[in-house]
Image (cartoon, rainbow, N blue to C red):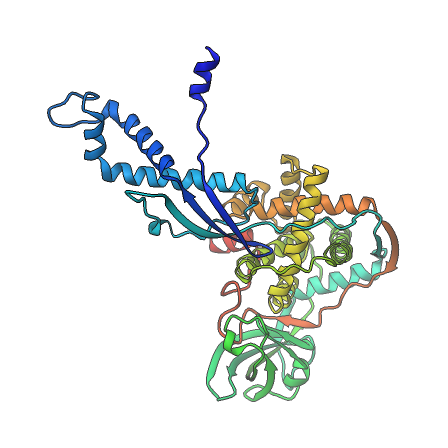
Length: 484
């Protein structure tokens, strides 16, 4: 084939007049004008593609005059040309302006008109990755929590585990820490109007009560004043990130009607219970499994504290603002990412619920920090050619499966159905990049104590709706297992 023939086959680049306005660090307003000659060129190409198959009365297929075909199929051709011009123009804008989109363009396609004369114009806003100079990430000084898992740790964890299998027995008197109360909850605003209520909630008595959009300090002291059939009340402050904007920061009243009181009776570690807990043959096998779980949890605490220090260092100079709409969209992703990481590290549902309730009450600020960290880690990963591999996904999925009791195949299918594989990918890339950063860091070990749970978390929002979704997420696998 000659050079001349090859040149004829090369697609022509769409010529555009583009104006890009920077609205903020991550937002651009783009105005596009497609010259008339380009519209005419696309029209001629579309008519040429239609000619061989166009059917018009009095003409054999492919024999109708070009002008008549263009006129007869004007509407169909107009829609086709408009759509193709839009798609090609959006692609060209991204390439020519070197934009790095992080969302779809905010474009009203139906409002874009293909004119009979003059240029075709349209405009849109789009969110893009922020542009910034990479901070210095080599040679960070990091404090790393460290401890040996000893027998006392194992025994305490075993006691907590057995407590979950304990028998609840009726109790008299006032609730004590560790008891389980059955109660009706009512939440009212300053005007006395009922905001939400929850019936027959089972709540373990702890110093704090954690809700999706508020936290009550002194919960154990509050219920200690009541007996079955009595009602106690307390005031609490709604989170600044509650789903109902008008209630943020407001003081509301919680009324708790105590219906019943029960105490846990610890079970005996019988062969039957060992089997129920995981087909363990001996108590020592169970203790060894608990030790490994504690080591996984210690690893999570280490990664969390190390990552927090890395994040603080990397984002110290990231003063750029992020669009509120982006933060709102990403907040649920941040919750899901946190849940996957907690599940992978062997935390139970109660621990996950407590953490998620805490995160929800500052989710916008947490998401802003996480997104800034993500953009910086992503840029480091690109510069250092950090990539994911199929083996990385297999490792992550096996870890989640081991903690959830499900098969890896089932976990993978669940993540894919819920669209969480991209969350998993981000998690893999970020962890590998953090590993790269820490490989260049210097560490000082500091003593670590496992945090003692002082809050009881329940699936209820004072406002009636939790920010992000209407119930506390556990995991994709857990939810699907419950539905089957």
